[in-house]
Length: 593
View 1 (cartoon, rainbow, N blue to C red):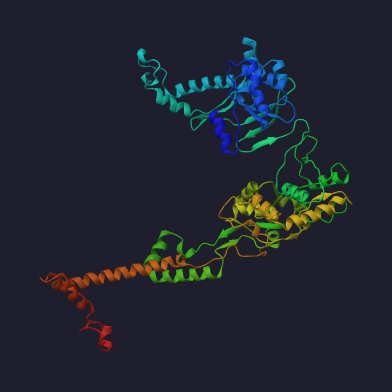
View 2 (view 1 turned 120 degrees about the horizontal axis):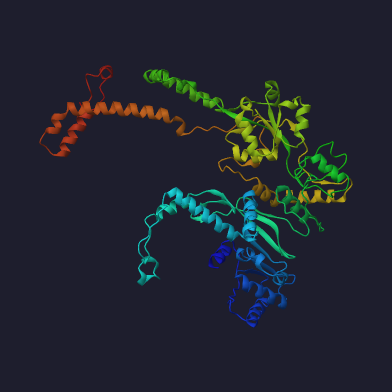
């Protein structure tokens, strides 16, 4: 319980009241504790107790009215995992309660094991604890074989201090066996079996609702994807996204309430269907009342549905890879580079030319510069799957054999990285909102070069002559003029790569804007500074050695150090009559002779 309490407090869940019920408590004592809960303002209860006490508590909770509408009960996995052991009366008292339990896949190995178990012991159903016990035994046997400790010997236990764990001797093979066990990984009856930081890995949990004669799985939770929920009664699926949040904000800005239910659009098999033309036709037929999504406003679509005002910018962007312009003066075989070292003057001149080149041209340049350039090359190009871009590209002269679809930023990056020579593409076409997401992750490798096709952005869809289209359009203007629109964009278009520029600035760039502004600083001239400094140090060191050698008699004189330093300074400032330059110049009165 302390760990559960700490976990709830870490996510800012306040626990105003705790009650402890003894396993030996009488029915009257249980009823008294439940009545205390009833007078509290709290209506959500988390229950963590053993199976026997659970059945008694919920029977009394039903009698006191705590199982009616307005109260929520959440059970921990210890209760839900043993839900099948409760009788029908106990299950009826727990109707509407939700809980969690570890999820394990029904694999072919598990089916075979159940069949063998049923033949041997007339038992076919196993809970998670029994499956994990079997997997733990398997893991221990594998660890013993891996560690080579088939003969485990233990020292004699001190019987006088049997209750003191420190007095129990440890096998010399123990640490080796523990290490082998921590490295074990295999597919067990309860799923993948391996340890993370000394704890058994759990892939996910099931959200169980007690309905009817048992528990019904209404959702799943995984650490990667979070909670996926679906109401078992209304079959309403929870959906999220930028367009969903913007629509919610628009309906809240309206002068009257608009109740709505989001229904994912799918085919007859329940699989997602992203064909927008089919979806808009469903609105035309009256099957759906509206469409909330990234629907581009096109002229051919406006003939059978009405669009609201656009809620975000939408045009098609051309994404191309960047190429690095390498200075070939400092590359090549070793013989060529060594020659550059000896011909130092020529290397300095080459560096100066390279520096001038950096001031006048981009060091990173696009592989293609326009859609006409892509057409002329005849290389494959990518496009966003199930979008109108396919038709636009066909109208522009691209053959269907050169069009490669993709459905995610990762797949687009994979195609661009491979390039046409390895089955990839030379460029990709997608709407600017998707470009913003893509460049927010891969801005160092790619660039949006131009906007080849203009469309009238994204909008919400309503049936022809629907009064909601005009009212929602007014609400969109209110949201767009407020800070809410900026908050939504910052929340949904956040850069994955923090070093990338703000993606909200990308659509405002000119089609052929520079890749990045190159500014010169001290670091741009570091090589020149290093060369000059090294030359000065070498020359100064050589002169100092020569000077000290010529005036070593002064250093050896038996006079105070101050006088010696003064005489050395006079010699240092003394004009050298043997110097060619000093013979040409007239004497300077300020120099000591």
